[in-house]
Image (tube, rainbow, N blue to C red):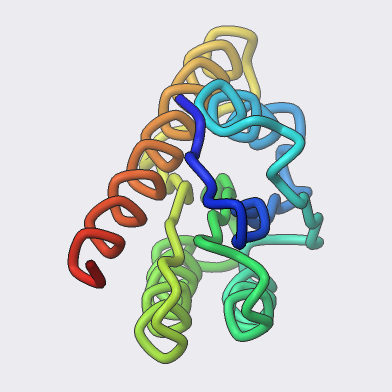
Length: 152
């Protein structure tokens, strides 16, 4: 799927934020995203962890450069904090960034109840992140199409 462009519009760009915790798994979401949206239309931004994503998502959305912003992270129980609180804050912040700016901000942030750094879990979550990346791209394209129809 590609975006159609009029002679007067610039190419549609998308921002993709990736948290570096569990980078090998989280990076797979970008792989899925770029299966539907060409990598040449995607600007990629790395952040240390999930908690840093909402503010950057807001800044990217406010820039006016992007049709949508996607943010990917794997938030797991690290044993010293309640990962569900971090996950809730991140998802709430991403939603608020989208609502405040009017630019779709899509979460590819997964918060499994049970994750262990085993080959089995890494494979399962890696595959799941590819699928979630594709779903975020589908959502970005669908929202863009619906908004264009509303504007017509």
